[in-house]
Image (cartoon, rainbow, N blue to C red; front, top):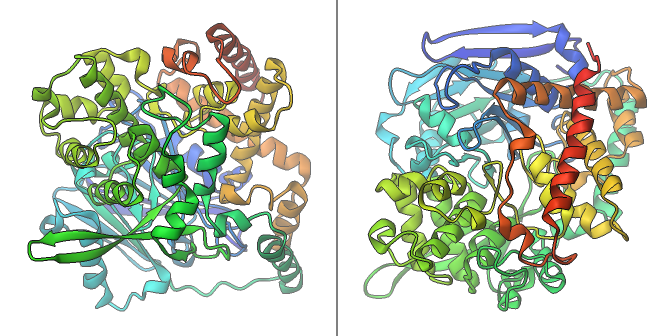
Length: 588
C-alpha cells in the first residue's frame, strides 16, 4: 500500500457472504503484483480439490507502482487454471489497477460460491453481493451496460470505476473462458472466466475515490517525468501507438514464423490482406489507452454488419491486435479484415480467450478433414477460410452444444485425447500456442514457462535476437528472463514497456515513493516469486518432464528452420536442473 509498510488484502467469502481485511507486513518483501498474488494463491490453495471447485481462490493484485507511474497499468489474476489443471496467471489493463488503488486495496482474495447468480461491488466503504439473475445468459457488453446503468445511480463515476465481467462461455464454465475488463481489455488466458462462472459470479465492479498524497513530490516528479519522456519521445513505444502489434504480421510471415492453417505452414499467402497496414487502412477508427498510460496501443476497428432485411446495417467496433489476427485469421485461413473482426466480435460477446478458440478450431478443422470427427459432431462445416462456420462453432463452444463441443471447450489437448490428432493439437501443457513459430525459444519457452505462455520468458524474442543458436545460452536466458519478469510483473508493468523500465529506472521510481531497495533486492525478489510459483505447480502435481510436445512443432519449418525434437527435450531437461536448484535456495 502506497505510503504504508504493509499490503492491504480484502478477503471475500461468497459462501458465507463475509468479508475481512488484513494488513500483511510479511508480504512487503514480495513487492506487489504477481509477487503478493502468488503468495496469496499458495496460502489459500486447495490442491486436493478440482481446479474448478468453488473453494479454490481467485486472487487479484496490483503492483507497487500501480497507476502512479506511466504504463504501470495492469492487474494480475492468479487462480487454478481449469484449462491446464495447474497455475493460472493472467493480466489485464483498463481501469482496474487505478480503481483498486483508489479503493485502497493491494489485493482481493475471493473464495466460495454465491447462493445465486450474483455480481460484486467493491469500494473502500462497502462490499456488496448483488443479484445478477436478470443478466445471466446475456452477451458480455449488454451485461456490462446493465451493471454500469444500475450502479451509476449510486454516484459511482466512470473515471474511478472498473467493471470485470464474464460472458455465456464463463457462465457455462468453458475451460478457456475469459474475463473482460472495461470491455476492451481482458484476463484472457487460462480460464479465469470459468472460475468466476463456477462461483456464480457474473461480474465485479471496483470503485474508489481516495485522495493519495505523494510524500516526496520532488523525487516523484523527477522520476515520473523521466519515464513519461521515455514513453513519448524515445521511440521505444512508437510502434505500439502507430500500427500496434499487428505490425508483426508481415515480418513474421516473411521470415516463416507466422502460424498458418493449424501450423501446417509458417507463411500465409494472404498476409498482405490481413496485415496491420490493411487493418489501419480499412478498419481503424480510434486508439485508446489504459488508465495511467500515455501510449494509446488499444486499436479499435469497425466493420458493418447486416442485422435485418431491407438494407439494415449497424457499425460494430471491436479491439484487435496481433494475437487475435493470428489466431482467428492466419491460423484458420481467414483472409478478410472484416471477417476477422466479425469472428473477434463473436469471441468477445461470448467471453472466450481468442487464442485458445482459434487454436482449438484449427485442430477441429483438420480433425474434420482427416475424418477423426464428422459433421454430426461439428454441426457446421468447418473449413479453413470459412468465417461463418467458425462463428457458428464459437456459439456452440460457449453453449457446450453437444459432446464434441463440450470436449472442445476443455481445450485441444483434451479434445485430441478423446478424438485423436494429438500430433497436430497445438498446445503447451494444455495451453494453446501463441502466434510465434520462430525457433527453439518459441517451443521450449512456453513449455517451461510458469503459466506456459510466450510471455513468461519471451523465448520467441530470443529466437529473433540471437545471432547464433546455442542451446545452453538459450536455456540460461530463458531462466533469467523468467525471473526478471516475475520481478517486473510485481510493479505491474505492461510488457510493452519492458525497454522503458530498466533496472535503474525501476529503482529511481520505487525510491521516489519510499521504497528502500537495491539492484540486488530486485534480483532476489524475482527469484523468490518464481520459487513461489514453482511451489504452487508442485502442490498441484505438475511435472515438467512429463510435458509432451505435438509433433507438428518439429515438422513444419520455423523461422529458424526445422526444429529437432530431441534438442527441445534436452533443453527442457537442462531448464529443469535450474528450477530444481532454485527450489533448494532460501528466500524467507
